[in-house]
Amino acid sequence: MRALLFHCLAVSSAIWGGAAHASDPINTWAHNDWTALQYDGYCEIRTGGDGDGTLAVTFDTGGYNPSLAYTPVFIRGYSTPIDMDTYFRVFIDTEETYFGEELFAYSHFNEWNETVASAGLTPGFVPDILAQMRGGIRIAFEVKNVGALPAIYDDFSLMGASATLLKISEWCSFNPNALATP
Image (cartoon, rainbow, N blue to C red):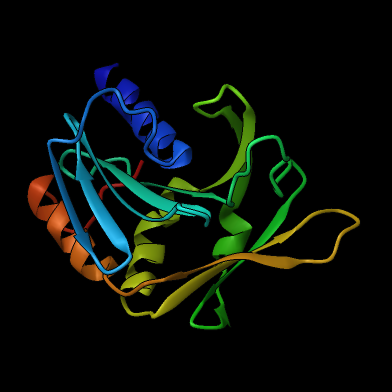
């Protein structure tokens, strides 16, 4: 039960852009556009924010239950570009991947108690996307809603993602090449 609670908090932190953690991080480390955060019971790597959407990958200590959450830029008072009928495409270095088919939309409350929609990756695919990200330069998320044209909402640099993943794997005691999935 405790692991599930920490996992839920970790997913919430990935979604909320770091504003609502159960505690302050034990360790933080940044390299290029990526940041590693270690908390009591879980770890997270993230990029974006500050006017951009966020991409965060969260792990329980030991590397268990990896999760990936993408949240487009959120402007208070405006709706997010994701709804429950949204389709996604994910590009790594301009090449379309199959991960868009494994993203699902979900809603949650942000730190201002406003409803926000994000996209989560089916958990079993997190090790695969991390492996591709480690060999890439950029990752982009295309959002397509019914009746609207598709649009790239965020295009994140992957520079620093590998080093940040290696740092968090040291802190949280896991092998980034052999993640445990549900």
